[in-house]
Image 1: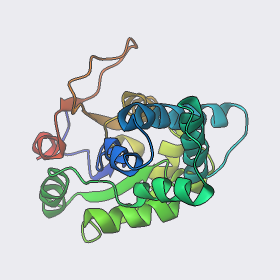
Image 2: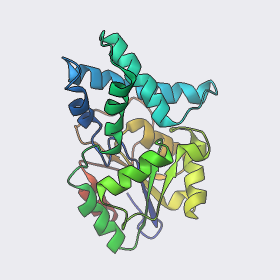
Image 3: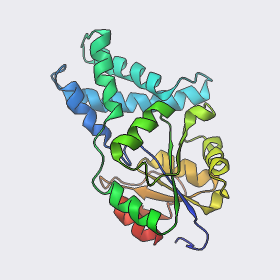
Length: 225
């Protein structure tokens, strides 16, 4: 359970937590026959590339890894598109649909006095557009990007970097994320954790549990208030 006297800062993951990555299907629909399948492979490969990059010292900004992942997904489905068409699809990451519970939940936390940040693998340009599109610029103190230290989640150094950027002891930060790998990474680094399990996924087979498991950001706020 949360010790409310301890937690002063809340960090939020971005993709899959604040905005819906499945929305990428709409950008693919005009170009491929199976947008759901391509979108799923695109997202999976994008995450895999970020994990691999951290292990083999092959860092690139997340937008570029996402570009490589899109190309892989298209190639795997036998789809040949021009560079302009691929860029058009890729640009959807600047305007993914925002979950309806995001602003109400964050407003409650902001009004309660918590300092709110976005902590993401996305590079700064992606995060700037996300905050603007999600209409939460008045609620968040800042965005913290993996690009600042060239390490992706779930590397412990990124969560520790976030603690330094926010000026908060790491055990007084609650990290809110939809990805279990992100929750486990934050927990390993010393943060409190809230898993936003929107699709009722089963837990992963590793020791440790999030401090709270919720269905959305509004419920996450209730756990902290």
